Image (tube, rainbow, N blue to C red):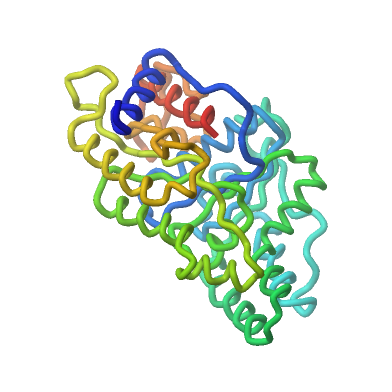
Length: 345
């Protein structure tokens, strides 16, 4: 069985039999990261937040300036404290105030779906994260010019330090970070804060290019991420916990088998991953691959109504942007794909 056949066989077992791997979560902290928008990252991140919160108390951080995760979890709220209020004093010094003593919000207060979860807390995002890269790299360049290795390390680990402190305060055992589709700034800090990354990859050419760029940035010591890790005294890169193929077509005549075009993109993504095998804990990077469908209406309902896909009831109706959408039987397939993703983490 070659790598593609292995990925497809795992997917078929997941959707037909509800197959999941066994064992505890392998890492304490994860960042969901991709350097391209429109790949289904927000849907995956929100659903992972819910699923992981069933297993352990969780601290979440929204490091994307679009604030999709914040909107899903704190819909229509305007939080006074965001990740910017937490990070600015660390990066810029006491002139910008002190870091808030309470930097997160209890998710179940704002999102009913989390009322049955383990205690979960969110450090909300902020649109000012769009300007964050210039702030961060100005401080990094100053510290590097002064040959202050400890200052460089402290800056790179500012998000990690803040989240570790907040997790201890809230007794959270796990951490999940949402990132933007841009490497600079918040995503860079998220990679420094996370033990492992989860990379969504849509089945198209641009997403394959993004996957190659992402893995090269993580793996190549001559690229920006590796250069700054070395300037910080030799930091290591996060592991790759999963590569999630998203919006996979299911037009094949074979049950639970992606169509021919999707299989071609999956195969090429596996080839890219194999070039960076050292980033994976699996002996075969193909074991880190998860195939997910184009969730279409289920994904829209999940995001618009802040209802995890695993809690959508087949046959129920929901009004989204003036349209009446129904959850059809394919939702069970999606639920099993998400369950399999969580199980390999």
